Length: 587
View (spheres, rainbow, N blue to C red):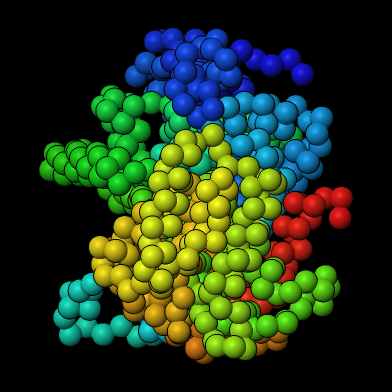
């Protein structure tokens, strides 16, 4: 394979790329080695570049992408062709000789700092993040019954709840809403979606692009989608989109993934001046900045509309802008006492269930080295006396699985000092007799059991400690202690998901678990999935309180919480078999 000197940090449809020609302001580039800024040509340095378009070229780009909407496949045809193309790309990526796979493994680790094995596992496990359920998700009709009880989702496993923003009922006055009244208003189909992808983990720009394009399932042409790629991780999306374009070029003819500055007022004005949906996955500070720009763009649009109306000048209707913010979040694991009962075996493999659970829970914390919002930080373990494994016994097995995963999915090229500092601190806390460290100083991770009573400041500090493969196991006597004793100390806007290991064969979703899930949803948790799936969310479900219907419909303020399963026990075993096949392909 001939390796390029500089990787593309952007993606455009090939025909459009040829038509636009050279960018007015040339190209910009960055180089990284082992995830740290470097100079081109230095040992291990990987470089990526992107065009610096002039304002006229941006307008030409928007115009050409909009023209492509007329000929692009849409609706069910688009989705069938996308699924077929993804299948072909997935099969190719599994082949060691595939050029896209080789480039991903050669360049992404050096640029981002993540290990080659981590990137390889991601490429080979993309089927765990299924798109097959999105058509059903976009056909849902959640009603106000979901504000007081879990609703089933026709065509999808799991349940859904809606938690309205505080004060919404007081704004209704004496008006009452029937349970069967829809939560969403009639659709407002986007013609332009603008996205901002974070760079802490690979793939965010790709996720935003696919979600935005999925709106064509409502029957309209796919929108123009322009996603800002992160300079900190600009390689993954262009590689994957290039592979898809080779299979079916027309699928992505309305999409562009580019790099520009948030502070570039001219570019932001061109894009936000016409967008109906803006999706931002970024830091809280950046989201505050983008939100202000979105509000200014909409106010300018509204003033222009009113001015035209007062003059009698024809103008298109004033359409609302929907801003979907995905800022800093934290996630956790919850291990129920029923899966910790001693001597429970999985029939197929004969493995102890506790070992299966600890492997999947370890994977939820290992993936992306806890740099991603989905990575589990604290593991809450429900103890049940002599009949079940204690929190310490669970932690011993967790440490063993973390040690195995350290070899299979090595930690990225991050400084070890922070890991050692946390190890030293928790070893010191062993003097309290309420803390026990289960890992060693030279391990590429930290596992500690902490039984201390913590207040608000202590909980927040401990959650922030859990980065770079640091896991704190906290015993609880009952699962309800999690929302009532811990989550209550954390800002609802910063809570994201729970990875749970609960249930028994054939029991499905128990009433006690649904009450627990409701309590977590009220605290701000927006997605509950089973252990082992934390790093591979299903796009059909809630992402930070927003579901796919939010891309098409306005609604009242509030957040959705979704359960992504009907039978947690069976899904845990299904995930275990899939993960085992990836970690041990030889069987």
